[in-house]
Length: 464
Image (cartoon, rainbow, N blue to C red; front, top):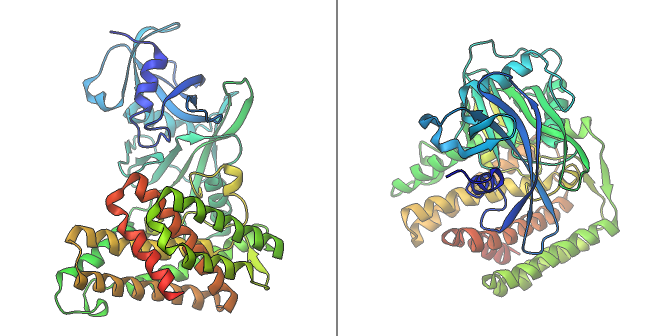
């Protein structure tokens, strides 16, 4: 039976990992189609879908959903099926999420090669970058969550932002600047897509929809390398981390140096400033407020709250200026790739829960450092859950974590040639704030992972 287009599209959205409204009641407020990518089969175009929630949240979110309209169902794409509809212009058709159709992936790449420019959607190429040649097929990557990426052989990767909003996307802005600067620690930007669309209230928005970048063909995910290192340690009985063949510390030190290099480039390419005493007070107050809310949401935090608060009180007492600049904004091991030419940082979009404007705001580079330090803790914690908790394994996991935290900081500080005392206070506050957030997140979404951030909270209080 053919349902309404909005009903079927809504049902499809509700099942997607990149849809932030999973588990909430929502309605589709508007669907804005852009120009057709092709006038022949398959008919496909990028469409912008605005949704709102029925739980009193006044905000509206917009998602990019490229759609393909086929004359009949194709069993090869059942995983991308939205449903049959009676289209006012095309008649009875079957609608699919177009990114999974190889023919549409080819249309998107061809649009870059043609520098396609319509009144409402345009494809841009950076400085005559070399693009994949015709005939290179596109394959959707399975690891993405908040976005969808299409790999074109071993040459290029097209990342389509699923949740979009008006304004420039930091991922494109930062990659464009770093690519032109010749940074060694990012994948080269090749091009980007931008569009105009109307939201449910009729307002016109202009924003980025996706970015094409060089494919790092020799890359291995930093998270996977770290997990393998912890597993190697746990299967040994008597060895310390530095004695195991999969010791990660040398890589952690090189990753710290790569992070420092990117931070130096960002400081050179974008504006920098310093936080005033009033702004530091506001930062400490905001962290304290988040802690108070977190204790209500996750009562497991309550015994540790006074100790955690001391980190924020120390931040408020800093009397030295704190330099702020453009940063990564959501740095962890999963945002890194190890290639034969060294470490690369990826995904400069920033924290997904923040607005585009908030993601582009200047912040201390130590926020990135704190995120990476927490990631080392998670690598050990996740592996510990897989092996089964126990005093000996926990001790070995803590030893691995501390060794790699120290190596990463050593690589970063050596490359920066500085480690002023006030940074220790600031770093501790950022890490504490991050751990508090993680406790709330895990309690809501992955309760079986809750021991990981709680263990870090206990350590932070003990060390304080």
